Image 1 (cartoon, rainbow, N blue to C red):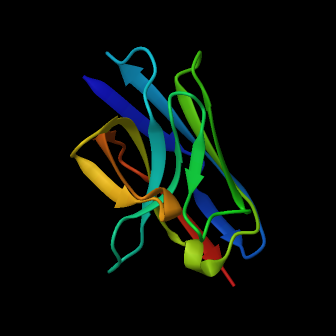
Image 2: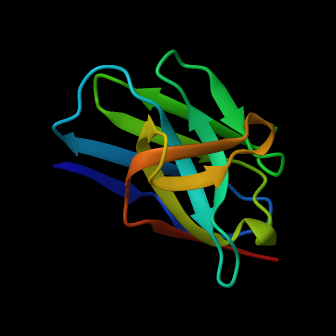
Length: 129
């Protein structure tokens, strides 16, 4: 059983910053890819940022230059630093883990479509203008 728990969401004004965290627990070991999804009401799930087992990262075009994804293997944690937030960033943000050929999928900008076995419950980010 693998569990992902997100935290750090909230309400900010445009131009502000937030740092999302994701704690991983359960039977998961070794190198595995992780990522952040988001989904706004009446919109499709979107890949925001991903990080592979070797540390290489990928970003949606909308996130590039403003968001930074990182991870701490020892703490089994994933992070998303979001700067210069815009109202269009308002969405529920989800943490995902363990790259696979199916499962929870979304397009991560130029990196293409990635799927993961596990998805968290999400944390809400609301950006006001």
